[in-house]
Image (cartoon, rainbow, N blue to C red; front, side):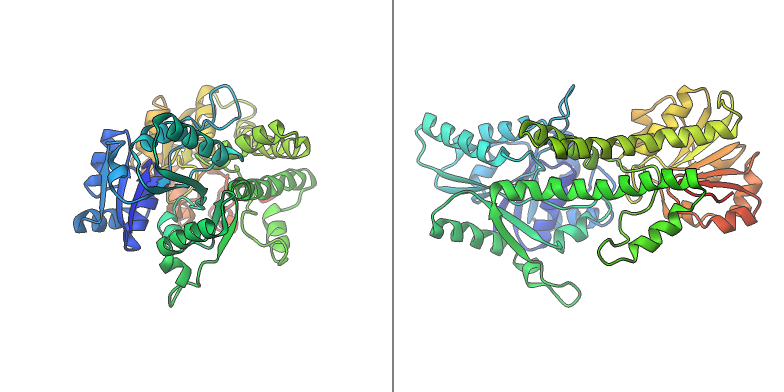
Length: 453
C-alpha cells in the first residue's frame, strides 16, 4: 500500500522504516530539513539498534523516502499516519497537541476522495474526537467533498527495541469513531492489510492480536500502559526505601515477588527510576487529563508515582554526599551513563544526567562516560566533563556512580577498575552489578535499597 507517515521523530522514523520493511511504499514528512536529509541518506539521527539497516534498505530500493513538503501525502495514497510529538506544555503538566492540529490544518485542504488519518502519537483522551471535529470544520469551510476519517492506532515502541516492536508488535489496538457498520468494517480492513504480516505471524513470532475499540479506549490504552509500568518502577523503589530503613535487600525481594505469576519480574528493578522522552511526560499528561475529567483519585495516585521517581535521584545524591562526610565539593566523581536507558542515546529527563548535573552544581568534579550518548549529553550539560572511554572515566575517581545499565558497565572487571580509581567506592544506581565480585575486588559497594557493603 501507499502510506504516509507525518512526523519523523523517534516514533515516526521507526514506523516509516518498519512499514517499508513490511512491504509498503512509504513517504515520511517532516518540517526539519536536516532530519529529512539524514533519513533520505539512509541513516537515523538517533541511536536505535537495527534502524539504520531498515532505512538503508528502504531508501536504496525506492520504497521509502522523506520530504519536507506538507502537501506531499495528498498525492501519495490515502492512509496518513500521524506521528508528531506531543511534548509537555511549558508551565503545565498537560500534553501539547498543537503539532497534530498543525498537521490537520496543512494536510486536509489538499485531500480529495476518501482518506484515513491514523493517529500513532500518545495523546490525552478526547484528542481524536477533537481532531475529527477540526477536520470536519476545514472540509465545510473549504467546500471540499473529501471524506476524512480519524482513527487511533497507538504505538507501543520501546527505545532500544523499536525495530522489533514495529515489525512484531505484541498487540495492535485500533480505535474507531462511531461509524456505520460497513464503514467501520472498511477501516478495519485497511488496518488489517497494513499489518497483514504481523497479524499472520511467522516461524518465530506468534500472530499479533488486533483489538478494535472506540477512540477513547484506544487513546487510554497507551497512557494507561505507561502509567502501569511507571507504577511498578515507583512501587519497587518505594519498597526499596523501606528495605534501606530495615536493613533488607530489595534486589532479592524483587526477585521473590516477581516469581508470582500475577506480578511478574519486569520493571521491578529498584534504582534511579525511569526517565526518557515518554514515561515522564506521558504520566504527567495523564495526571493533567485525569484532573480535567474529575478523576481525582487517579490524579493523586499518579502524582505520588512521579514523586517517588524523582526522589530516587535525590537519594543517590545523598548516598554520594554521605560517603564524603557530608559534602562532595572538590571530590572527583565519575558517572557511568548519560542516556536514560541502555541501547539508546536519549538523554531527555535522564536520571543519569540529572544526578551528574546535581553533583556538579554541588561542587564535585564530575566526569561522565556513555557508550553512545555523550554528544547529546554535552549539548544539554556542556559544563560537565566527558570521557571517551570507560578506562579514562575511571582514572583518579574517588567515587563511581553506575547510572545507566549498559552491558559495558555490567561486564566491567572490578579488579582492573580498582587499579584505575583513587578510592574504590561504587554506587550501583541500577542494581545491575554482581555485588559480590566488586566487594571481593576491594570495592565498597552501595546499591539502592540494599544493605550490601
